[in-house]
Image 1 (cartoon, one colour):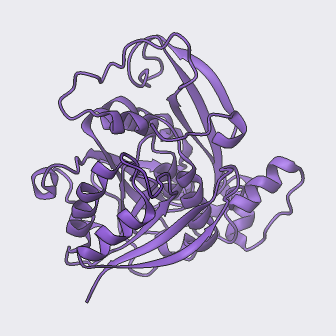
Image 2 (cartoon, rainbow, N blue to C red):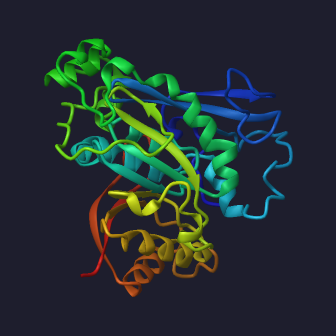
Length: 341
């Protein structure tokens, strides 16, 4: 299992230890009755995104309820927690890609808890989150439902338009952002969020003239017209066999946050990604990554393993940025991946 930082500080955002013994208020228990869960929240463009993740520190965790499902793997089990690459991707989207994702259809690979995908949806993107079937049903769908109240009907349209008039219905921070004003942070938490780019999201990105509507049956997320839904996508199966009811080929952008850490995952991930990059829209992928392997690693993939495989399959990989994102605690990188012309 990866060297996850389990410190509450490094996992990012306020966290609360909870015990979910049964479904309540339409939200499931994320993977079986009686399991300890950690509630994680983060501010995103004037709203609060909340997810529940498994508590790896629980001493009395019961048998994983997904253990006997055919598609479930040890690697899949790590999708129920939040990794540092997610914070890196969220930071990059909030500070560098807000204009690019607004009004676009996004496919996220290996979404896990859905924190990053929901965060990006709050910035006006229409996000189709994907993972193994068990992760989708036991985690993603519940976390989407958990955030269904984060939107405002008076502040969104089908294609995510936010105008000066309906900006009056947004919270003060988001309204200021729409008006082009950036409130100054007032305390340490606000400073951290401002660095992450999540307290107000900066100046609201302009709605592109060719903005698109959300994926079918999506849930509205946030105050900028974004939405989210989820669908299973198992990398060891052909993409075309899983492209229903929603067609992954309709994506404008592909995102992935630290989804490859085992050597056995590299080839299936790359083949899946290349299939999506080969769609008529020729999307670009932004991939957050933290190297967890070494030259002597037998199990853990290295940066060279991943980049070599991508290039061998006809991809062009460019380093976009690197550093230690707020609340992550370790260095990560983001690569832009496209198909070679």
